[in-house]
Image (cartoon, rainbow, N blue to C red; front, side, top):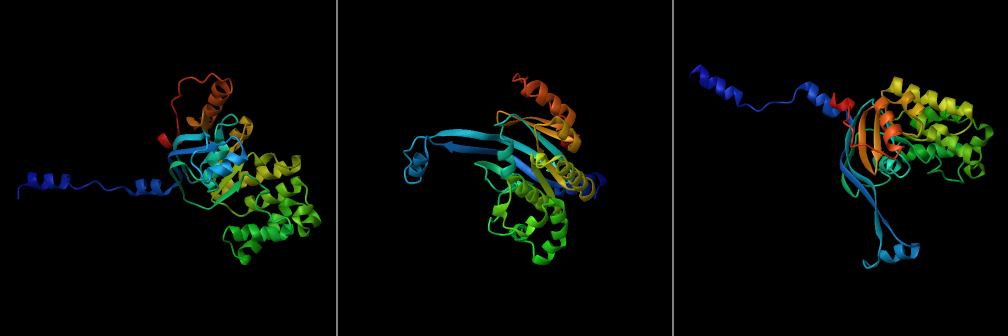
Length: 282
């Protein structure tokens, strides 16, 4: 058979993905594909109740997130910036599975630890120690595994003898300290923080920032941070996603993201959507 024919046949074989391409695919821990989240707004609680039985009740639609598409890779630290109402917290709640998108797809590959509502999920009649085990069981952990983290959590929370008192006797600050201690000390693969680093006094805030830095540096943990502080965003993150009018307005280097947020979004004079310089596009 002539060489030219053999060469032609070889060129017709489909291209296969390289090992590096496969590694890049496997490295994606969070993927959003055209995700939109809408809420129905009713005039009253009565109207909302009636809507369960009748489709004739009037309501308005609030779009919290509009057609979001992006990927986050293992070990990335990403700050989400935007004015109040831009959809940041709603986005994080969808990633954690607390909320579900109205349309689009969300893929999460890894165990998520969310510092969103730190006091949520506590049983007020259980002691702080018992709530450590309750939280662990909710994450599918066995008693033996939880016990490995118990002392570290108690030491970090630093609430003294109250650890063996019912949580209903705690102040809101004590509950927040315990909630942060549980979530930050159980070696998450994906750590989601929504302004939780501002909890407690100055000494405790310093401990919170130190443990987040350690988690990022040592454990190759993916960090998603919602904050209004450009200082905190720069301290923890290399990438920034700016949300404006429920959409992704910018996605790229953290310094440029902060500039866009402060000069465009906060001033209320956003220019045409800036060209992203995302780490993923490099």
